[in-house]
Image (cartoon, rainbow, N blue to C red; front, side, top):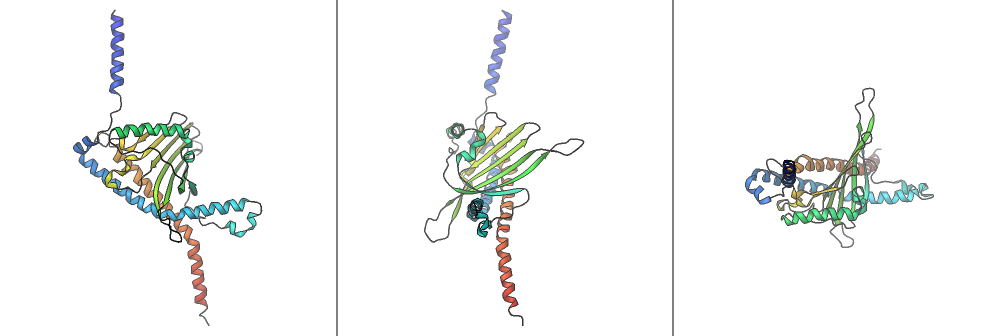
Length: 309
């Protein structure tokens, strides 16, 4: 009898423990009331992020250049195409060290292929969005279009600490993809591109340890008003090795004294990543215009020399 009571009591403790261990849903109104300083800090970070988006939106002209580079590269690969010098020309020939850049088309299969089937990931995100909306958090499900974009990737190696030699045992890759919407549809007018989708990806492959971590950060409204908690709908998708994929909505994370997750993400990671990639994109843009400037300088020198007698 005593043994039965002990087992029953133990089961009761397990049930109580499992119930108390359930994650607590975010209470945004309580956060505003109890931690106003943290909310002001978060808003300041969102303004900084909005400024970073504005700077990145100026890189839209690289999309058409990279798209043309892909077209000429395909023509060059055709039989006899390498003999046509026009096919060897590239607008974007130089990138910063340990980086590469390419034209990309918005495609759910391309963006989500690491995390399972598109249907599985959509269902996973939809469930998190439903929970967020039930708490009054502005969140939207994954919505894909056919936007043109440009993708810049920076890579590095993971090295071992072997006493006899320094060996590369894996790689780290950080990627920022920018997708644009054409807002001016009139013919024979200058294109006006608006940054409408930002996708960040972090991949860490350690071949020796057999560890692969992949995170995808999706912001579907990068051009909104930062005063309207515009980043609440940011989706973070995470997968460790072949484990089940997890998804989180940034607006459902806490911003309290004990758990300052939202402000920590924006302050310590996201704004730093955007600023870092803006510098890389700016270097690519400067490299892409370097040849034109060199040619123009050569023309000026030639006409100047014509005045020498």
